[in-house]
Image 1 (cartoon, protein in one colour):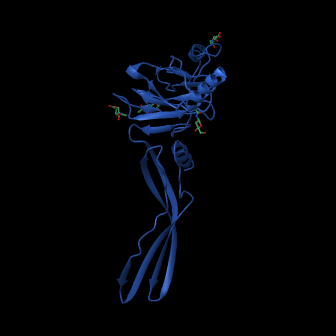
Image 2 (cartoon, rainbow, N blue to C red):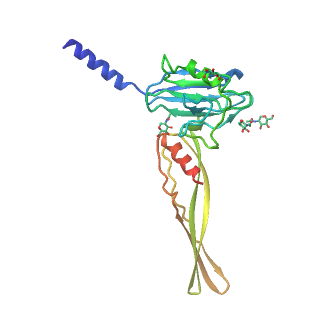
Image 3 (cartoon, protein in one colour):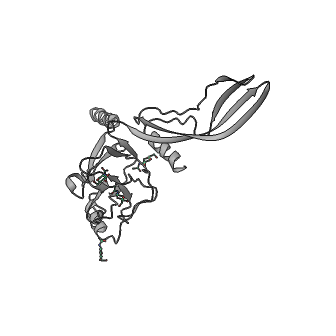
Length: 254
Ligand SMILES: *[C@@H]1O[C@H](CO)[C@@H](O)[C@H](O)[C@H]1NC(C)=O
Ligand SMILES: *[C@@H]1O[C@H](CO)[C@@H](O)[C@H](O)[C@H]1NC(C)=O
Ligand SMILES: *[C@@H]1O[C@H](CO)[C@@H](O)[C@H](O)[C@H]1NC(C)=O
Ligand SMILES: *[C@@H]1O[C@H](CO)[C@@H](O)[C@H](O)[C@H]1NC(C)=O
């Protein structure tokens, strides 16, 4: 009885363990390193990468093929910064206990082959971080995803949340009534909007309605009303970590 109670308490403690954010410095002090590089994380934890000069990336590969992007893997894009820490951070969420392999895809000075690699939950034997580093040093070249938007994580401005850009395709209908006759014209337009929001905040984009000005013209009376019908991107609502993913998905379609 005593032991089963103790086990129960231990199990509850494990379940109650809150997800944490683990900071990782990319290229600090000009070194071609991730610090820490042998990262241990629990499912649900976030890894927040901060970037130092000059121009690094956080890119996911497989163990078998270092220095080349894993299909469907994450990529921060290149984050250039000249003299100090970049204001941008890249955050990924650890979804399972499988090992995750990471490299910097900068080809100038062959960062990956030079040892700028890291792992999350690498095994202690066999496919270790040391084995991965050795394999990477043997890679004949290093490549990065062609994408110019981050994949599989959230690129955010420190302290300001996530900067996201979206555009809304709409049609605008202008109705003109003049001396009893009505003319309607419909045309397409697009609005580009940039939001800065915390990842935990809800982002909602709704349709735009114009005002209905009335003006007099010539002898008769002319009234003009403009309404914009929101298109497919309307009511783009998301919260939590999904904000970045959804916005980036929307961007990828542009
Ligand atoms: C950063 O590195 C990438 C990849 O080599 C390159 O395409 C990009 O132009 C670099 N950016 C700057 C500002 O040097
Ligand atoms: C870095 O310095 C170069 C040359 O001084 C400048 O053109 C560039 O805009 C700077 N890049 C950043 C990200 O500050
Ligand atoms: C590195 O390359 C050499 C020569 O191709 C090969 O013999 C060796 O097994 C490779 N090492 C690793 C860790 O892949
Ligand atoms: C975790 O899952 C989310 C949502 O599917 C995905 O965007 C993210 O890339 C995953 N994280 C990793 C490290 O694969």
